[in-house]
Image (cartoon, rainbow, N blue to C red; front, side):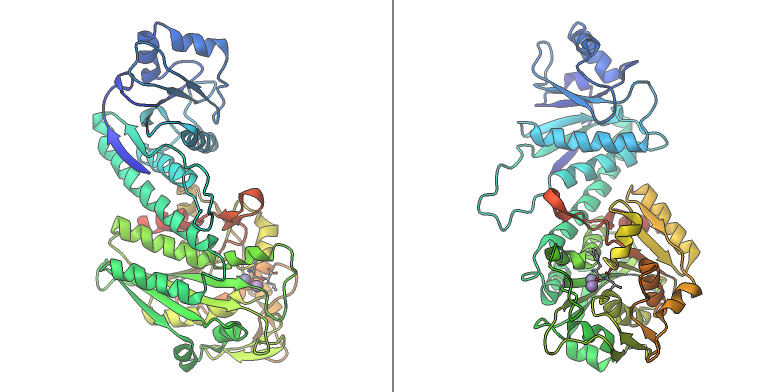
Amino acid sequence: MEFVVKSGAAEKQKTACLIIGVHKKTLPSSATAIDSITEGYLAEVLKRGDLEFKPGHSLMLLHSHHVPFERLLLLAMGDNDKPLTEAGFKKLTTNLASQLKLVNAREATIAIEDIVVEGKSLHWITRQVVEAVEYAFYRFSQFKNDTGKDPCLKKVILLADRKNAEEVKAGLTQGQAIGNGRNVARTLGNLPGNICHPTYLADEAKALAKNHAKLTTKILNEKQMSDLGMSSLLSVSAGSEQEARLICMEFKNGKRSARPLVLLGKGITFDTGGISLKPGASMDEMKFDMCGAASVFGVMNAIIELDLPINVIGMVAAAENMPSGKATRPGDIVTSMSGKTIEILNTDAEGRLVLCDALTYAERYKPEAVIDIATLTGACVVALGHHTTGLLSNNEPLAEELLGASREAMDRAWQLPMGEEYTRQLDSNFADMANIGGPAAGTITAACFLAKFAEAYPWAHLDIAGTAWQSGKEKGATGRPVPMLVQYLLNKI
Ligand code: BES
Ligand code: MN
Ligand code: ZN
């Protein structure tokens, strides 16, 4: 979507669709002006009760005399004159985006200052509106011959007072970068496992580096990983015809001396469970088991676009988890790069096996912090459902920073506890640890496993098993938690 910022009076806009906010009690100034030039038409329509004033409702009015715009979309702002709550605003943006998809015209104009949210700046509101539009207009149709009808709308004009134009522009820039980054993550997530394999992800990283001078990419193949002693990671790809890759995208745009932040994504391009084979129902959704990796690509895209003055390493541990004669068996013992030995009791708990070696490798960047992002446990879906990302950390200030960023970005996360009692569930009779901790607290024991490999730096883990994709009719990757992570990085500058 193309966005531009413009100043001027709402009632004077020559546009195919003007969008304004309306309260039940008093009309905002744009509505008042339109009401007076239409000789009370607006007040009359509203009085008739055709618009329910609850946020999330809207009413499209077609051509009227005396006005230069062809359509007028009224956004309900509530029964009273109070600013919207965050929940109300979310409903409003969702409705706005779906209305825009229906507009039978190439451009539309939003009186962005009409939308007022409790405790939020115009910058924040603009950014969220832009993100919502980018999200709604995303399409994944590259494998369809009949792609259906594209929405007409190509351009959105954000109308704001001259004195607010810079603030709106700044919100727009961030909103577009986050929206685009999120859509990059969605596309990688939506690609099927026969196309998006570890080498494909590595090629994507190479392509990104080729186009941007501040990014360099280093890719380890299986031989190189084997030389480093990454037997845990390699135990996952052992059964697959696809070679594993460890991808490191190095974005250097901060002070040379500044320690980098490392983002590490789980990149299981397909998770069959391996010899501990998963049941058949919905197994196709395990193509989404690289959505953590996809979010790292999305964030790298966004920070390149925003040219953030920071050092960030985007790492991806990419492998395919398949059963075969060469696959790892339940009970097999491997030695990780750290030297710690692991008894693999269940080959379906593979995410932690690829991440642990990558966490050890991350030490060489002397990072300020490492955040891994992973569709790690079904237990996280049981605990938090599809609305909230699980957050676990060995460092309270880092956890607080991420929770703050998640609130600010409206990309919800919730912290779960860790502790020695949980770690003990990983005890093994035959190795330093087992790769599973029994049925209780599966998300926490998975994090406790990772924590054993993240002792050298502040570390946080985001379990996105419930939030990275949607099932059912709307099946598809969501691009979460790109908004939260970009906010976390924005807060660093
Ligand atoms: N990728 C899955 C986790 C998952 C399952 C995410 C369903 C989203 C929906 C992961 O590799 C896995 O299989 N985890 C196991 C761990 C268990 C064997 C300890 C799980 O959650 O069942
Ligand atoms: Mn698995
Ligand atoms: Zn998995």
